Every structure is written in structure tokens, then in C-alpha cells.
Image (cartoon, rainbow, N blue to C red; front, side, top):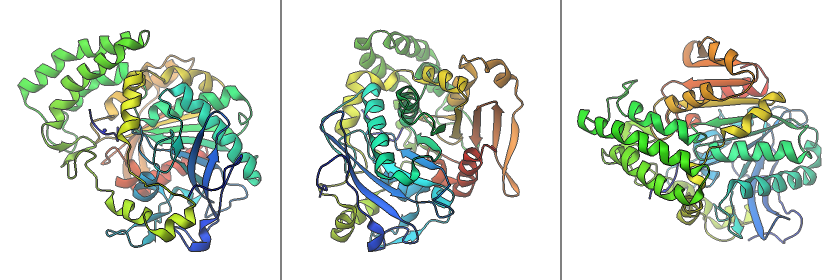
Length: 426
């Protein structure tokens, strides 16, 4: 997870927004909207930045993106992964990203929960709160931007969004207001089923798919010996929140810290951790978002940070961190909502082995067919870019030569993936 380790506000009303394209920000060739949605579910004000499709905004789908953390701004993905532009090294200018996901979709980036990025307001640290707030946000957003009212909607995100995306998608489905719009959800290198996923750290730490084993035999043996106690703690957490924090600390100490101590990047096992604790340098984005002209165009005040330690700590203390959320997906799958789980195979912290394992273990009527489905080479252009297992509405894609942030490491493949998914052609 991109997390901190143990990782002018417009006039208030039902919704507030402006159009920063007048200032030529990021993607001046499309209409843009930014500002705050003032939630009716509490004193919370969520910042968003939306970009219309470069192709056909009148018919193309809408994609919601949520970065994980918990507490990391979606601007991290906007500028570093799949957004319309990149910020140069010194934060003085941007250039267009030819692989932006708004090539064929209208994109909404939102900073949530409150306290993340430019968003502010009453604090919350539960997925029930995340789902409630994001349903409120989306209902208001679609009402305010009425021309998108009948467009298909896809809920996407990565990392801790493995919690957010199922919770929000389930909330939309059960709320009913936008159920007809919800066509699919996609999670990249997510933490969704900790009870299954944490069991695969011991395997990933000595994997050699394009990198060396991270630890020696003694360290690996210690991790393997500690894994059953970690999994037992996660299992107990599902029914007794008081046990969650001690279980998380045990799991981190025995399965995450041994890797961190190697100095390698937990988000890309091929590289050293360049700028601890996140290992990536987003200072150029911070410089750009602190410019007076940019802030005025976006309609914000307050200072931006890539990730909020206080939000991370709140979710850890609430017990949410190692709660399972895959159990929210069968209802959606049964209703025909498509689900894509994708994972870069060089990531340690939310590795592809664990993500593959929980998709295979997911109990739903199509489980047998999914488990029996052949794993096929998945091309992007003329070369193999991944390995795909798909059956009915569920797909799992292992993306080759990519770390935690697939659109950053393999932008062309990531764009092909999301375009195929939204076209129901994956």
C-alpha cells in the first residue's frame, strides 16, 4: 500500500465547482471541473478534479479513481500514473500524458476520506463511512454534472482502494440511485482480502520473477514460521475489532519489516527505496500544487500533501486495515457487475500472488468456472504484457514488469487494459 509506515475552498453549498481549463491546466484540450462537493452526510468537503474524455464525452464512460494509503491524494495518480498530464522535475510546468485514461473516458479524481490531499472536514476511519460519503459525493456529482447522468460508471483505484472500491461499489449498488450506471470496478495491486493475502508474503519475498530473492534462508524461515499467527490474528479481527491493532502490528513486524530492512522498494522489488518512507519523490507535484495560479484555478486553499499520516493512523486504530472486503463482491458479480483485479508482478506489499489467491478463493456461483479457466497470455501491442484469467464477470490480470503502480510502470498496457475492460472486451 502507498502508506506511511508504522505510512480556497469554494463557497459552500450542495456542490461547488469551477473550470480550470480556462487557465490551461494539465489537459487544456478538454473541459475540466474542480472544486469541492460538500457532503450531506456530515461536515466534510471532498475535493475533486475531473477531465472529460478526449474521445467522445457525450457517450464515453465515467471512471472514478481513488488512491489508497489510506490517506494518499489521488493527485499522486493523476500526475504520476494515469492522469492527463505529468509534472516536470522542478514543478514548474506540465506535459500531456499520451496514455491518460481520459483517452476514452471521463475521469474523476477525488481526495478521500476527509483529511486527504485538499479535502477537509470531520474525520472518519471506517469503510462504512467511506462508502456512505462516496455515494453521497457521486450522487451529487452526477446531479451537478447532469449531462453524464446516463453514462456508464466504473469505480477504480489501487492499493488501500482494495478496501475502498468494494465498499463504495457495494454502497452504490445498494443505494440504488446510481445502480443503473454502475457497470464495473477495477482494483490495482489492492489490499482486499488480508486473511488470504498476508499468507503470500513469505512466498513473494523469495520469488525471482525479474528480481533477486529479497532475504536469505534464515529470514525466510522466520517469516514462514510467523505466518500462521499473523493469519490467525487477522481472522480474529474480522469478529473482534479490539484484536485488530495487535494483529496488524504482529503481521507488520514479522512479514513487512524484514523486507523493509533490506532497503529495497516494497512497491518495486527491482529497485532500492529511493525516498523513504514512500520510496517515490512527489516533491515536484507538491511544488506545482502550491503555485498560486494553480491553486486559484482549482479553487483550493490549505496545503497539499501526498499522504496524510494522521489519516493512516486513524484507519489503523479503527481496525479497518486488516478487515476483509472481498465478501462484498459476490452480490455485485451475481448482478453482472464486472470486476477486474490486476496486479503488477514486481510489487511486494500488495503482491500478485496474494491477489491471485483471493480471487481463486472467492466464493460465488461462478467460482468453479473461474478456477477452471485457462490462464492466457495477454498482449499489449506485439508483445506479451501479462497473463489473464477470466470467466463471466470476473477477471484477474497479472501485469508483467510492473510494480505497485501499474499505470506508471506500464502506461501503454494499463491504457489498453482499462479501455478493454470498459468496452467489455478484456
